[in-house]
Length: 108
Image (cartoon, rainbow, N blue to C red; front, side, top):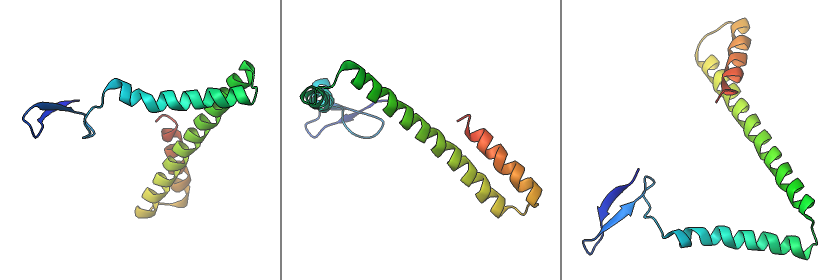
């Protein structure tokens, strides 16, 4: 969602939802392009092959996805345990509530 806000000279400036003004497209793309060129240069200097690059991208994607999954499930377990500490509950219902929280967290 973008809104218009007047600059000091009276001309409108486009403001993003986060509050920062939008930079031109080429200025936002330069850091990504620079990092891509550095990555390709390092791969070329270390004489990596295409399969090495694909394997490393697949492995990093797998690890970051697994870490995201564990973080989500861990957060759901922590939230359900905090709720149970606030509410006076029996020990049998604590386990079922914690498992329900973990199961619910897996759908987020």
